[in-house]
Length: 118
Length: 402
Image (cartoon, rainbow over all chains, first blue to last red; front, side):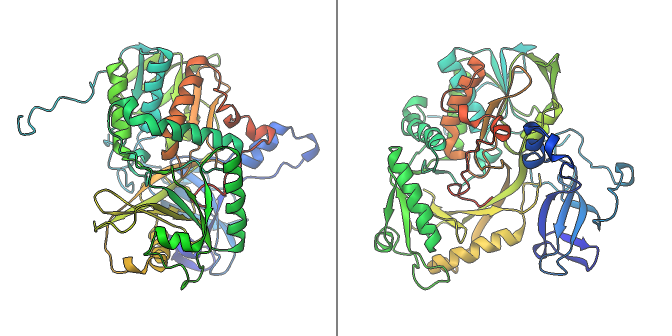
């Protein structure tokens, strides 16, 4: 099980938390002018990267506060967690994902043994 | 007889040619099936299937092999029933035993709401000519005597039952399609990872792979959890989220359960394999991930429900547990569609229930790729539905809560 660092309570087991999907997605501020296609983007489309992913968590069985985290989805390594009010960390400040190809497998952390590692 | 020494190769392992009429990315059941139907029904034999691992090593080899067609909406019923009909003739069609076993599938109701939802679905199925029926608790007890129906937190109140549903042997589906496609001249290229879909002026021109650039004007992406990674290489965003879905098998025991029992409410589903192992499906993790493992709390949840429903399994040992990465769409229905780039086709979004659809999905996707337009069965499953709002909401019929 993942250990997640709640910015308010410290490290806790993942089953205390609920995931809230992609972070830093904002609702269009001009709803009258937004086209169906743009609404569709906001309602249904979210990033789904293999690698660095910005996401929301809520500490449901703890302080019940929402916060953001950065996780490498190819290894599940959590690189950072931060309060909602903080800015999105810049990629330069984050450790690089160790994926060598877009859909390949990382050196550690993947359960996928069917693929030859490069 | 040569004591298992001189087995012939089941398919060739060619090096990729410089160009093909079409490339299918993903050597699982859906991808290999697509190649098979492209060759058989549409005469396209100068095609290749690219697979980064080995055939059927992804979700085709990681699912719980349940096959059924008891979906709510007409669009889904048509698609999954098309598939079930192909399953019924698949062993003969491929001349290879896929061990399709129509042992029936039961979906349990544990609450008043479940009863209403399941009865509604049974009625919808009946109108669509699907052999789904409502069965009482007493009938369930006859079919599955080991089930604890009363002495549990969410008692069993009834179920839907589809007798024509069942299971198949997952590996043979991939191998059967691969052999027959190979015989018709399809190049199956394993250990070849797709890096980037190459486009020019809004048209597909080829694919960059770990074995070099392969030219083609048509590319079909059937890469389940990794579909969005490949789509992004061509600048396409898809409404998919990739999550680990786990399953586990027990030590083998004598036959105790001769049907498939699924329960959405307490989240446990089980069947018994021909080897005697219980094949148990767990849920998805609550967060996006591409690690094919999944969290232990999810397994614990499922085992808890299993032991409550079947106290007789309480002291059994589990042999193996694994995870596959499933691509979940917002309406729990697949996307079998063209996109803004000419010559680029997607067959994805099967989420937690793609195995049952393998032949049907492959069949209509082959039509879509060959004719550059959807088959009437998959027209409703286009990407446009997320703009028009005409969703095919199957959260109730999808076994794993999304």
